[in-house]
Length: 248
Image (cartoon, rainbow, N blue to C red; front, top):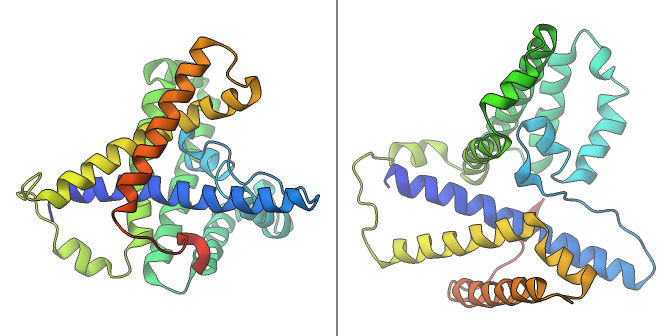
């Protein structure tokens, strides 16, 4: 497997797990709403995050709030001198919550390390009054893209049960598109990323709120619906299965 294909798989899985988790969460919220039960939102455009702390405020918000309320705050929170150990402990518990597997543990430690790295870097910026200049050097969109790429690497670890087999079969000289399967893989990835951008830009939400009363919103609605139908046809060729997060 070439590095390019491996990166494509990682990014593709990032998109897949987001729409999978978001999809069945919204189904649950919708069904609950039919019975007058208001379930709070669980996502807030997580792939617009620029760092791990920001990401966990946007992704699986119910789990994050539970950890904050029942572990982080009772154990001292930011004020404790054991703050780094507390962060490591919480992310380790999060990894174990997903399952007793080595890849989950490594995934949790990657997030813990990234969280602490940003935390102390941010403190360094504040102490040296450099946060403003740093923001001017690297735009927020560039930071979002870089963080999404790093996040995709963590999702690849999360997905792979046997990491040794995965990395022992990675090569630098593999063909980019050796067969038709890879053509399909890249096509699905492109369409999925387009839908992710549309979703995070809030276009579907604006269409629902305004009922597409302007020509611009009508055009956006047509593009969104067309891409959605096209994606469903493409993804349907691969069969079907349970939601990814059902096992958690």
